[in-house]
Each structure stands twice: as structure tokens, then as C-alpha cells.
Image 1 (cartoon, rainbow, N blue to C red):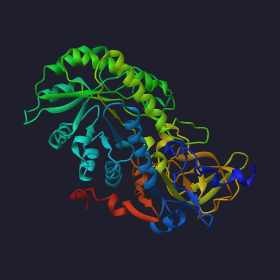
Image 2 (image 1 turned 180 degrees about the vertical axis):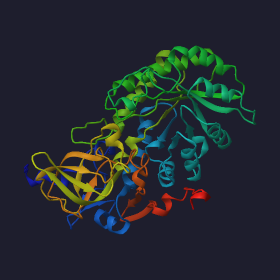
Image 3 (image 1 turned 90 degrees about the vertical axis):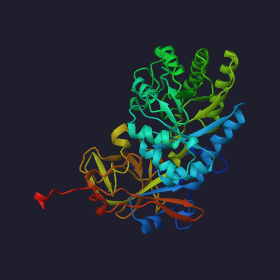
Image 4 (image 1 turned 180 degrees about the horizontal axis):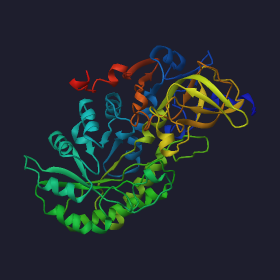
Length: 459
């Protein structure tokens, strides 16, 4: 049995430090997290235990102040460090829903979407189409049509897509496109989320740059607006992003040789967040400064005008803004091996541990000052042995009915959620200044079968 002093053993250790640098991606908890006088975790002025009582569990709790703070830090840092025009785009695959799209747009951000569904959601949220960019390595004709009709920019990923757009029936205005190139820059992250190295399904091969630019320059129906590259996700290193700027500016210079107007340069995103105490990501400000300095210096060296600089943060905008609350169920102790604590969710609301072997931290939200006394494995309720949210989590004595919270769940939890085992997806609430509003309604059993069809012969 492990026993540690109360001062460092309770859930309080995860709270944002008072007066510290408030770059949200460097904290495990939302910026508004505190312990109230009931010894409960409070987010956005709302008691998490009360939220579970009111809205049920599992429950995503999204802190509006943390999300808006991250948006402003990105937006203001680009204005501070980049001598030219800039535009921050939210990589909405991290969490795309009406409320999130509306919040980031209200902070002046555009949105990067990767499907027709994400594009449709952003449009319905009222986002300006000129600030929408459609990505994807295999866009359907329907998705391309929606993008063209709405007036957003299409980030062209491959030769087939380029030819498809070149052959598109002419309209009143040319189709705005960017070209995605693979920069060949390695970074230390999970192999599934490295997208900048040459062996990737995304983007044109950089050895074909001349052929691509020549083809684009011959297409009157296409308006070339710039280049895009992205090296990966959950990156703590700054050097790869510094290298990316100089590589991309060389490509811009080559585009000018084909008389293509240099307008925009999109350096992607990838800044990591803190999932555990040992994680030490750069701040948003540090990351932006490196990117801006690199691009500005490269443009000066190549003697080309500064393009409009775009970036696409996702995880570092929303990851730390959300926690997920569960109710604890039963426990099972395997003598000499481990204790399992079951919760009422799991891989259907957070598939990252089983998909990426991602590591999280947890606490008991209704007894924040309780000392850690043991290690236990937090198990989901799905019929899979691999449905483990955290292996060997340090926890206080845990009881059935406790509210267990997993931190930093804003990115790729809801967006990758499923109905595996026919579990309804959880609700999500937006909290701010003591007010909680449903932004995603909890699914019901009726929702699960609404698209099922039973052939007449089986009725």
C-alpha cells in the first residue's frame, strides 16, 4: 500500500497554480478549477458532483473561460510576433459541435474542417465561409460540392483531387485552393499522429513540387492561394516547427517562379498539452514566437513578401478545457496483482487509451482532499479486456458512487466517441461563471435504433 502526505496526495495537486503562466495547454485542469467548501471539485463555478447529479454520467464538462483564453493567446501572440497578416484556425476534428464552433469563431478564429459533416456543422454555427478550410485525403464529390457552394477554401491533398477540381464545371468565381505538401520533417510523437514525414497518406510528395505548381498555374478555374503542411500532433519540440517555416518558404519562392500569387502560408498545428505531471509542453506564446520568427526570417532571406500566416491548433486549444466525470461502480481485487475500479463509461467516450496507449490522470471529485492510499486500474464497462482508461492510477480510497474525474479530455474524446456495445454517447455541458448549459444532449436508447430498419419478413 502506498501512502503519501496529504499536501501532495489529494486532487488539489492538479489545480492550476495561482499566479502561474496561464497557458492552458500546460495545465492538467481547466483554468477555473478549484476546490469549494464542500471539498468538491468546481469547474467554471459549477460543482462537478452537482453537475453529475443534474445531467447524469458519464459527462463531459467544458470550461468556456479556458477555451476562450487559449483562443485569445493564439490570436494575440500571432499579432504580437508576426509582422504581416495572420489568421488562427481551430482544427475542429479535436471537437466539432455547434457550440464549440460558435465560441472559437466569436474569438476571431477560423475553422479547419476535415469532412462534409464538420463543414456543415461550422456553417450551421454561423462561421464565415471565408474562414473555413476543408482538408482530407479522399474528399467525396459531395463534400467538394458543399465546399465550393459555401465559398470555403479547399486544401488539395493529391493529384486526383486536383484534377477533379480542374475539371469542375465552371462557376462565377474560381475555386480557392491551397496545396498540402509533405515536408519530410520527423517529430517525436505517436506514429499514428505523425503526418509530416515522407511515408504518410497526406499531401503531395515534395519531389513533385515543380510538376504540381506547373499544373496549378495552367488551371484558370482554380485560384491558388497558398501552401499547407502539418508535421504531426502532441509535439513538445520547437525545432521541427522552426524547420518547417524555412522549408515552406522555399516552396513559396518556387510558386512565384510559376507566376502563382503568394497569399497564404499554413504551417498547421501540433503543439502538445499536459496529460501527466511529467509532460512539459511549450507555452502557446513560445510556440507562436518560434513559428513567426522562422517564417519572417525565411521570407527575408528568400527576398519574398510576407504571406498571410495561418496556423491550425486543435488539441492545445481545447484539450485542457474539459474533464470527464464518471460514477464509480464495483471493484475487483486480484490478490498480489491489482485492483480494478469500474466506471460507467470507457472506450466509447474515450477511445484514446486503447487506440494510442494514451495516459491520463484521475481524481475523486467529491473528496478532493482525501489522501492517495493505493494504486488501482480504472476499467470501463465495455465487453473488452482492453477497455482500461488508466492503468495503476494513484487514488484515495474509492467507494461505489464516487465521482471520478479524468482530466484533459477535451481533444479527441467526444469527437472519436462511439456507440460500441450500444452505449449512448454522453452529454456535454458548457460551464461559465456558475452557469451550466447543455451543448450535447445525452443520447437515449431510442436514438440508438432511430436509423435501424427491420425488413418486413422479420416483423
